[in-house]
Amino acid sequence: MITEDEMHRLFREAHGGDGRGVAVSRAPGRVNLIGGHTDYNEGFVLPAAVDRYIWVAARPREDTTVNVYAADYGEKSSFKVDSPTFDEEHLWANYVMGVVDVLLKEGYTLGGVDMVVRGDIPQGAGLGSSGALLMATGMIFSEVFHLEIDPVDLAYLGKLAENSFVGVQCGIMDQFVSALGQRDHVLFIDCRTNDYNLIPLDPDFRIVVANTMVRRELSHSAYNERRRQCDEGVRILKRSLPKIKALRDVSPEQFERYKHGLPDVIRKRCSHVVGENSRVLEAAKALKDGKIERLGELMYESHRSLMDDYDVSCRELDALIEAAKEIPGTVGARMTGAGFGGCTVNLVRREQTRNFVHKIKERYNAATSLQAEVYVV
Image (tube, rainbow, N blue to C red; front, side, top):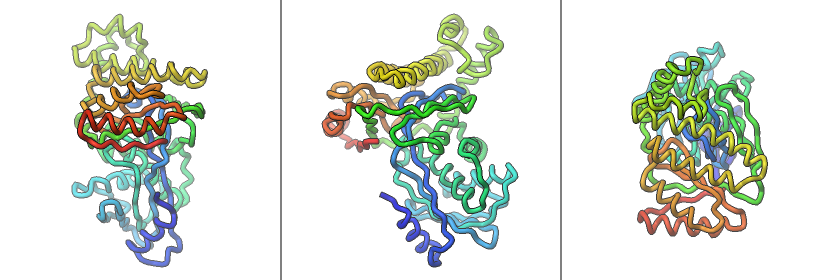
């Protein structure tokens, strides 16, 4: 487990000094109970923060240089705070530079800093490590330069950084839950209005994350392609529904009426998003009403839709879902994250969690010859 003391030690080793004047921030990763690929369609999501973090330590400099040491990679990147330029060699550094870029464009005054970044969120696993890096970076600049940025505003600045500087057309979910999530709660988010509600998780159940150990391979181009396909669906559906702005505005009944005018692939992509928004709304109500079994059913439905209509699952994710279904105590399971690898999220009865962890590893290995990592949130 990473600690604040460890971050101070890493900072002294990387940048020298006695540690005075060093600020430390951290931001959690996330797991999404339900709401796959709905956030960038202005829809609804139901994520939860996890107890794994990206940590950042920083100390201001007297010049305009930003020196960043990524402890997990053993790599350094430097740039001038007033002229961040995309780094082809150190792609992780672009998330730091992206935050600096949007803060400057928003009119905030920044100076140079020495920084160290470290994390224990598995990368490429679909647990929001990029969003956490954006938020931890924004938090540290806000603290060091006394910017006093509201958490919701910081989440949107992080999204803008990833969209405009990094070049990934993501939605707001990862940044939002990293900034606002709380322990033992899930966060219902309306990704259009910024409205959110923290919903307590029934203490008789645990969220368990199972990592396929297949590095998520949904490339920037594939992710952006899904977004373009959804936008194309909106463009076509507007001929019949001129008031809609995003797929979030299309009800399941309206989609059934007008879906036949869509090309096959576009229809499948839109079918998932329209159905998923409806499932998230029902899932949030089920959680509030204590209807955990219904929430589990909706999670399974979500995975089938992500697999068949959105086409972002893979053999290993499906193997984990099938294994989870057969283990006593499992209420629901689905892939989480962007897809093509990464993790599943499982809702498990608390008293059967230990058996679930053992059995899911055993059955996944039998099906794939791979060793899954399992985290109890």
